[in-house]
Length: 505
Image 1 (cartoon, rainbow, N blue to C red):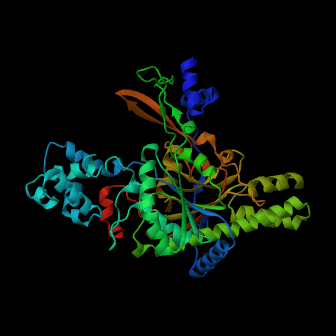
Image 2 (cartoon, helix red, strand yellow):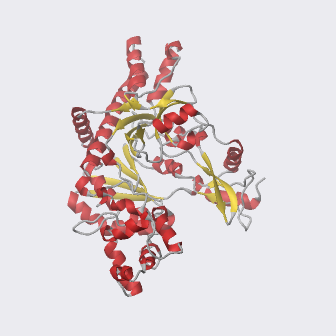
Image 3 (cartoon, one colour):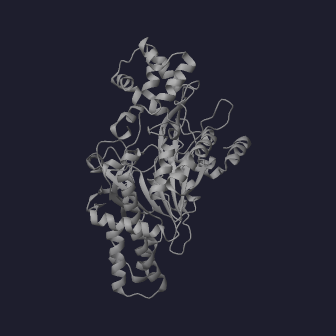
């Protein structure tokens, strides 16, 4: 039972009592595992394109860009970089003072290769009166790390990843945010404009805005375009309540309810607010220097071309269905497109009467569409492409995370571990219908695909609820197509030492 104080607290967030009750019920019941038909593979849900096809799709995309459509590059950028420095935080707290683990040794052996070296060196001189070499020379390694992580230094332990210096150039180092501005110019610009949207946390938004103000003119001049750069924060209404182990409300010491961010699935609301015909989605840390951007730029255009091609066909078929002027052969043609091109199948489709069939086909065609680049599986943690049963009995392509799979099902686990491809979060989305009206994206979320995890606060155990993930359950009822892209387009930075990989040098 919620108190008046509770009702006031949730009203301030824009959350209803019904939502709280539903979340508490989800803690009790948990979320069902998904029923899987198979992992997707080449020829079974994943398209592999030859050079000629790729060139055709790039041409298609470039022609589309000239038609006056609005294109937006959407970058989730609210994540703090603290996990990137987990090993270096551990070194600061260790009972030894010199690099001991392989990670620590690799960091210090190559410290001059980091794009942030000069700024870190200046902070060491400012705070310790000695440069990095001098501090290392007297075995004061921890002073160097403290200057990198702590607030009085570079504060990298608390900053968002998008604001760290990743790559070195002759004109100076660049942050991931800047690399995304460059990408926006190279494949997502139209009408002389590049629209880039970053989702950021509240405490960092001013920092992002200032950094953009400092840097955007130089990129606008370099690429001869205008930038429209916008920001949004995860909405308080997407926060979820925390529960005790017995599924009752977890309360703070002052008696208020504890709310937690709903995970990246909450960003479907931010995505829904974007006015665009086509939206690219890519994580903030998956960027490379200009010298190896060619593959990234080519394949972004390729998957966008595939999207435009499929969308045009879907739109043409919807116009036919809405006109009422079609014969059985035309319906067979549309069925083939839905089943083969969009990989959405219904076992009993032949049993439908023509009127039911038209309703079914219209529903499957008239919804948001996304084309997802997938890379060969090299053992990275994360989700992959699968053919999955939906609640309406159809089978379609989905990106699944391990948390959505029943680990007691040996066959499912084998599919997951032996899957040939991996999800690098490389999406291009079409979010308007054939009449130019925006789809209401939250309507296409599978609310049964949330996730419950165990956390703690002030030493007390609690259960946390995450919303269906942005590219998992939040896009569950979209048309989804997978295209194989090369590993060279996937270069995430999960630890600080990833910046020492050849691709980031």
